[in-house]
Image (cartoon, rainbow, N blue to C red):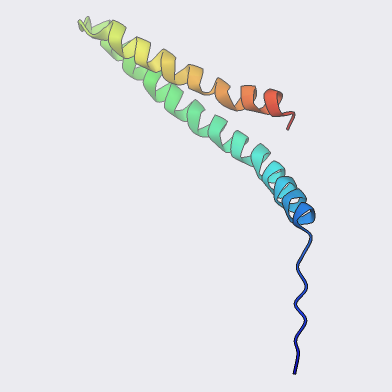
Length: 84
């Protein structure tokens, strides 16, 4: 008994994977912004407390907080660069 195997079109599979990835990007971006907002507020409170206490490493903590806030821009850059 002979069995015939049919392969699927590779372009159709890549196109389907692309559309699924694009559909997950927007909710993922919104989730990243929400988590970043909460962590940004926590970091801002931490910097404010160190500043009021007069700690010597306030500048280092503030620079780390600012750098992590800049990381949130990555999603917007990716979205505009890839046209998602």
